[in-house]
Length: 380
View 1 (tube, helix red, strand yellow):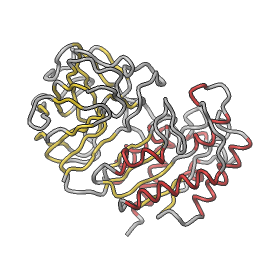
View 2 (cartoon, helix red, strand yellow):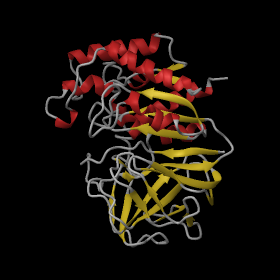
View 3 (cartoon, rainbow, N blue to C red):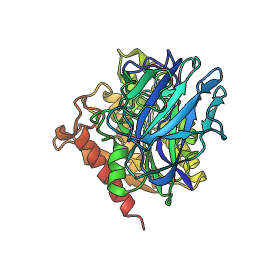
View 4 (tube, rainbow, N blue to C red):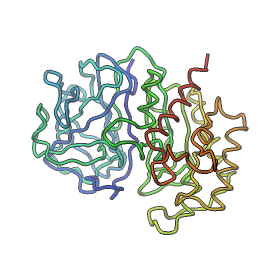
């Protein structure tokens, strides 16, 4: 049975938080991307997304290998990927494609390298803005490159690649659904210390990361992706092997309207707690319709951040009280209390604060993972 062992939620091309190649796209180039899989197996295949493309996307060829250092791959592990038996494929606008399986044994928490040769003009690229790990670009066909020297350019985004799937012997995966906290902002770049990584290490399960930095639960955004209630099906429910959904979402819906100076936060409708509760209920309805167990996580403390204000404080308190006491989730993890400072429970504990009073650092992320791991272990 093939299950998703790694995922990234697709986004519309944009300038993003850091320089990236999504708007310029690719032409006569090879793109090499390194990802860490949460499940092991003897065969691997990839899923490519052209969700925001407006014309067909030509994939001239693709390879997969166990990762080496940087852009290098482990010698002897390189495998050609095919698509319906052909070396290349054309993905229709707003479509996706899944490769044929390749015989490559991978272990849980091992990193694999996927290389795409793009020999025609791609146009703006469907991408995931914040990878927090390098991707590499080189001129021409570099599918079979072992040492990585030909890949002279780097960026910290993923392009077209939306999933790596493995032929696994277990299907008890977990999906984390949310915004930048889930996506990995605040963790050490290049070190695989996202919340999803930490939870996979503690549980032995495949943990899919369905976070998008800046994402909103109730509203679409050009920079920050489709609204959470709209993208859950694509980014979680359509992936095989997921049995549990953990929702940590809604803080941007509360906090964006408190930030006056950031144009990418606009429009930022003012939402009351009842509107967010309706959004959570929609996520629960969709997930349970696919047979998933749904865990609600309380919003983290964020006093002192640019998202904080009198209204944000009130709404976040009301939302967290509903998450804790509604009884509508299959389980609840109280991340707010786990990360709160001793003197002010609305502030992140200093030891867990990345520095912006909004995102946890590696230590805070580890606490979050342990809280969810304990919840998962407690289920009979």
